[in-house]
Image (cartoon, rainbow, N blue to C red; front, side, top):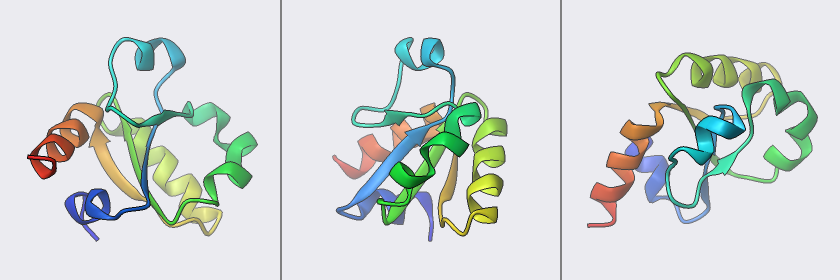
Length: 94
């Protein structure tokens, strides 16, 4: 599944894995912030979502989060930079 396909899903969620401070400086509308270091403590919350798109500043932390969640048998999509995910979401919403 591509990022575009995932974001088009009705029940998709965008998880921004940057720090709280970075998230407050700008984020994708409707996204939630779970810093990559907090993922182990939020697995039960994350498991409730069917379609998960991960993003961060450059794509490095979202890739780390993707690998971690995959190892926990949680499917997700690495969207890379939050700016990229934001552009895709805006294009889908017209």
